[in-house]
Length: 344
Picture 1 (cartoon, rainbow, N blue to C red):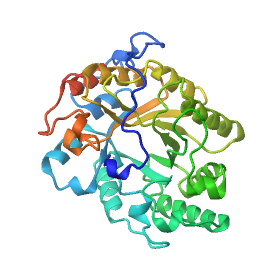
Picture 2: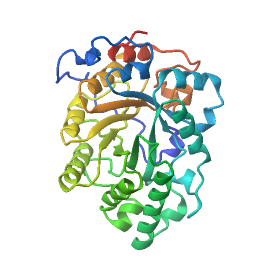
Picture 3: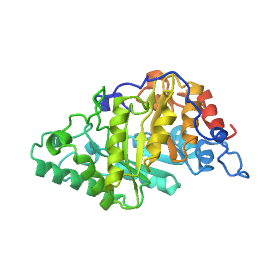
């Protein structure tokens, strides 16, 4: 993602250099959960589908006129996430005035090609218009937040596979608490629950997800804070269906406890997804370990890389994606595909 649009984000998680430890059924990691007679596919999305998963990418509407970009997009991926086009500053820059042209372009194109769409994102403290950040009255902000959710989610009702209902609400560091934002500061910590309940009403068939970065290490305070929230929501019947782990990794790839994190969230009764994957310098083993961890957890239902070519990445200087600037498959691509059981 464009770093100028990710205020306050750490560039990447460098939480661990160890490979993912295989904790679950041996054999699954190499695509053994495919049907025995399933053909070995030669593209990421087709191979992920063999185990009922998706392999997707972030998509920018402004790049859809690039033939190389769309060629790779259509060939390789069976899921898309709009990179910026559904965020608040893109959809409601002025109060009550909604614009959906770019988001519509992505959703219409994807659905016409049978690609799942992840809605990203309904409530986030960043890329937020100044008029929202200036609200100090709780009733006003509650009305504004719920109207935004109802309008955006309602427009795409029935067409979205999963929504990132709330994005990045927890603080970095060791507190394990929610970050300061206009939503938390004015509405209190209950704003997340209210957002999820509103989203369920607005789009009942979509999976409702909480999405965050640096929650991949099971031992971190931030991970534990999110875990406590999800456990509480499930216990009280708050409608949460999934947790997205962004997975912006350093060159070492995922932390050694990554699979434990995935399986621990899944044990609460939610799906888990790797939602914004990129790894500095795109090490083949780092991608293999990330994919393997997902395959080893039955409720890890999909992986999305955050961009197609290195030149499309918000971390372009680190060359973190599966295709180089010329659109060529990198060794990391081959590693990800073969780990799922596919054939390059």
